[in-house]
Length: 350
Image (cartoon, rainbow, N blue to C red; front, side):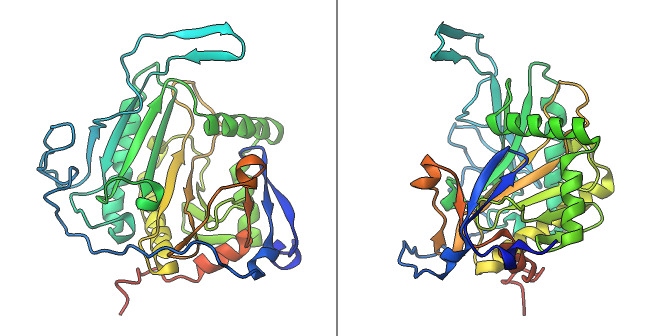
């Protein structure tokens, strides 16, 4: 198959089979002059320990609790959670156009390490491996609550993505009902599996490895690629080679390889614009407490906002909010830029 990057240099749509939605691609717009917003990059040195940080070991948090002097990862219930586990079920359906229902859930924070200054891109693969182990332990613990339906593990990195504390950390929001994006993926993956007898993302990976232009990185157990249907400039999908459903299903070698893949990706992100690259990322594992779901294929989404440099970001405005998402340079071009980056972080080279 000829690469769309070289033959489709005109406006076109691409279909996202995971969401069932389309994205507009306008590669000819990369030739226009840029006079948009430019911001001063924030690349400040962080200390290894910050006495004023409410996530550092031994410090008091915003809710007055005191952190233990933890040595590796540390998990606690969010002091200001968006969800609560102990609320009484309630619905309001007096009018079909005005409905409301209570939503139980819980929110937790995961400090990746005691170091205030180490993002995933700056941690060793072994250190990231401890984060992976924590994600697995938390999934095991939370799904014991039989009323729980979904466990969303995610990270918002950087002020640009709304992160309120620079100490590297992620979050878990677990809910009684399926989130909107998960509902979409559950439906599309199930329909595909019913028709073809294998997972959708297995077919995607087979094609991407054969075609090659959107691959960023891969090892024995994981592939990192810019999806054909990517919306964000340097969006990637991290997919397990084995079609498993939940993080706890990973073998020890798959866990180690996931840590290496995350390290390789985040270092390449940082190297792209020589900055601590912001993003929102999250794992999509199968819903919990709903039995086997062989159609579901474990994967993670990375959505970074940076467009042309460390100071220029992509905004979803105007037509994208009112019509459909749009991108300028192609996913193939984005993958090529990421592939070219070194596997050693720019701050460590030389």
